[in-house]
Image (tube, rainbow, N blue to C red):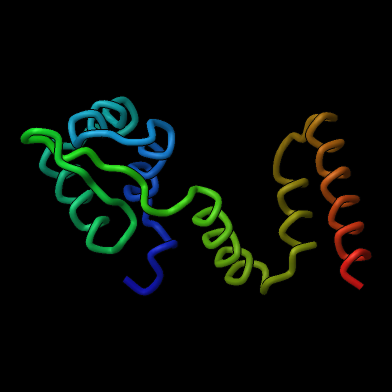
Length: 130
């Protein structure tokens, strides 16, 4: 895999389960995914094996069952995938990306206040670095 932090849709769904649970068996992952995407037990098991080979998950054995856990942090994957998306769709232009996100959906006053706070914090961080 070119970059193990860029996950395909099914890989990301599996990782969401593992991040939320901390760890899970194949059966638990399958059950958590069942409502949104019913998959065979073997499909989930095969995907977890491939993800382990790619360094995305790790496992421990409990009796005869493998218990999987994330080997990469959610924030690191988010950052990597978003950076890639911003580069491909917006030429790396953060202003365009944020502008598009603001125009594309409803933003609550609380979300706008948080965004303003994040911008102020980033401005302060940049001033402190000078």
